Image (cartoon, rainbow, N blue to C red):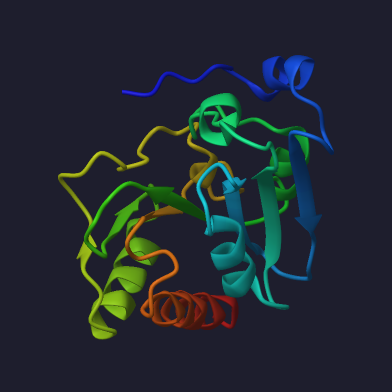
Amino acid sequence: MHVDRYRSYEELKKNEWSGRDFAVCVTPRPSTIAVIAPHGGLIEPRTTEIASQIAGEDFNLYLFQGTRAKDNYAALHITSHRFDEPSCLALLSICETVVAIHGCKGEKERVMLGGLDASLKNRICDALQAEGLQVETENHAFLATDQNNICNRGRARKGVQLELTHALRGSSNESQFVSAVRKVLLALQHT
């Protein structure tokens, strides 16, 4: 089991350099929905690209990206219920809904859904299953039910976390995943 090197962003920034070891990107848009990749760049590869594609030009986007030459996960991963980078929290404070994109190990293409927004989680699950993707909503390690999990830190205090296995990220099914999640969020934005 991985133990984070740092317990908060404050600890991390004392030892890692912005612009050398990591980069923060905030793209605000006129939306109440935020799509975030708190372990982007080389921490959990392809989560930056996936979150950016889901956000498109429609949704707020936040990226915390590892840019070190090596050991990005070991050095820069802050567990989601401790993730407290200030510009992320500022963005989420004005967003009703948060969708967090994460990556995990796995040789089979799977999506594990977590978070406290049961309604949105079910809609995303249905959309992904309609695309033929394997989805799990319970009995996995990424339930994201901690109130402090970054996906649950928007104004509604409930969000959705999507964990994509290594096999799914970069596969031919990645674009189907992006499209399905975008459709759900676009429908939500117009309700």
